[in-house]
Image (cartoon, rainbow, N blue to C red; front, side, top):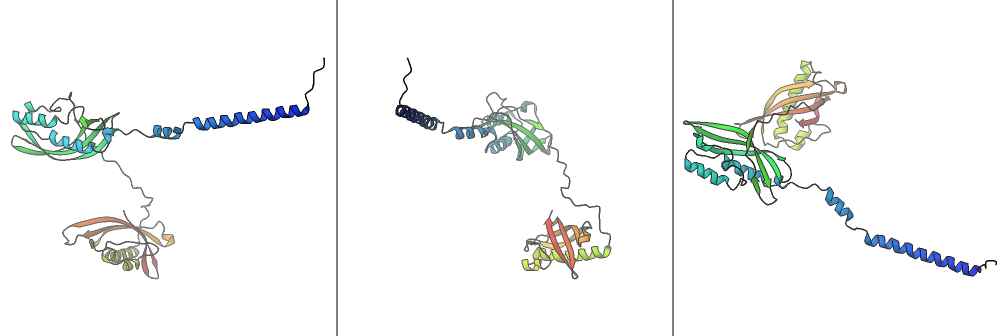
Length: 297
């Protein structure tokens, strides 16, 4: 039996209906995705990326450590002083830390008075903990003699976000080594000016320039410069003279001389002297010397 063919109008209606319901389904799916998408996703990701602040390194730990140092480096010689120091340290120490924080006063024949302390550095020592290095001065008296001591001490500090506590015995460390610094400029100091006449002219010019730089008005300073703004001292200090001057010829072919100078100033009464290093570049135009670059080093 031959399969009956549907009329074209019926087929057309079925196609239209199928397309219609597919469109509705697609629209419903899109709306659902928008409705159920986590709105705080970006915020949550941002919060995760933010570093967690260690409360033991926050503001307040420096004051806490300095106050502790005052109590730590203050002691006497008798039993009363022993008990007094223990009571003074108690608010700072964790319950399992030795009450005298490592100092054996019973066997000591000295006394100490605190002078001053400053924070050298604060290091993160893990969750809720830090190590605070103090630079402390105190005077120890023993056998009738006084000695001023300067030591670096590390104070282990813990915090719950509300309060601080010394969680272990403080200990001394060596004085930090000074960093070795090298000159960070590109000035070639091997090409020194050997012409005494030119060097003398530059020295005389800079002597006049620094006199005006120390006490002159802005328009007076501008008379000695070209294409550079130099703000003077406005009389804060009094010009006393130039010491060593070094002149270099690295850009002499452009008419420029590079100068390093040590300049001395005095305070208003002349009782105190200050010597500062300066760098300048000078040129000569129409028998006039001019500063084209200037900086205090």
